[in-house]
Amino acid sequence: MVCAPPYYPEWKVAEGFSSWSSSRETLRGVRLWRAPLWVPERPSGMKRLVHLASFAAASLPWLIAHALWRPDVVMTIAPSLLNAPAALALSCLTRARSWLHIQDFEVDAAFDLGLLRSERAGRMALAVERWLMQHFDIVSTISEKMMDRALKKGVAATNVFHLPNWVDIQSIFPLDRPSAFRSELGIAGDAKVVLYSGNMGAKQGLDVLADAAASMAAREDIVFVFCGNGATKAELQQRCAALPNCRFMCLQPVERLNELLNLADIHVLPQRGDVADLVMPSKLTGMFASGRAVVAMAQPGTELFDAVSTRGVTVPPENAEALASAIAMLADDPGMRARFGAEGRFFAEERLSPVAVFSRLEDKLMTLTGARGPQVQPQAPTVEALLQEVAEMPFARVNESAVVVQGADKIE
Image 1 (spheres, helix red, strand yellow):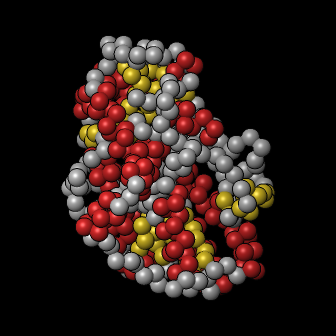
Image 2: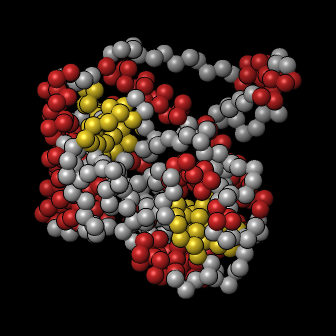
């Protein structure tokens, strides 16, 4: 893996790493080649472009070095699309299969967020993006709506692949006790905690969450906790400085992630309306895995709306009043919170676990490289056959088994 030194979301290279020199290390059995890059203190549109270009240039020698062992597959992850030309060239040089995995459609998002204002530059960026995407053997992305966006950009349907973000359901799980962060933050045991945890940047729309907190300042039983770092954190802290119901925390180490996520009685996922169909926030996976209720800001028809609406509460983006009403409703109804939390946890176990996601990835890699022939799908059993199988099980096994039947509302 060729990557940068860790710097996100603080926009500062982590201690022990350099932004000016290359390094190599092995992490959990994976060999990493870290290339330097320029990290701006206050990222803007042009600074972000130079930042990404600096990594694309500095990582090129490391990438070329991998031509010597002729990889089977060359995969690049966007952001940043600036790395894609070199990855595509390497795959052509070594006759490897090429794979572009898209976490964000960064060109579209740059337009919508006002980071890219020049119409001429925008047309050129979209044309280059379209050409690159059409020349990769596989273009994967993290949601169905983002797959549709790839198809609209001219990627062949046979080359598009759904590879969602995953969550470690063994490391993130519901606790049967209060989180230790409650006492550390001085939060009363009977207070309901509304937690935002993640990057604090422009596309998160955290100003709406600050407005909701301000409108609920009189409710002493509700506390808002903001955890993370990012470009807009200082401004957000200033806006909430006079609010007694707000707490701020820095990004927590991975060892305390489960403790942090279980601090929430209600997870909130604010989102600007103009980017809701372009990104599928990866933080949602941890929210579901923690077994806590979720409120998300999303428009109907978006992937985020579809994911949350049946196992949480959705409200219109950038609507502080609707967000505050949803938070109040959940805070006053423990049964609803428990039901949504259980449904989110079940979804994480069934669809977002490492086994579910990495099995898809492995099968696709094997098929792509010809290491495994086409997989023959077994014929689905009938409902009657499933019922007969369950009926023949010992009682103890019935309690430990789960049967999912597509298209059946209920089986008694």
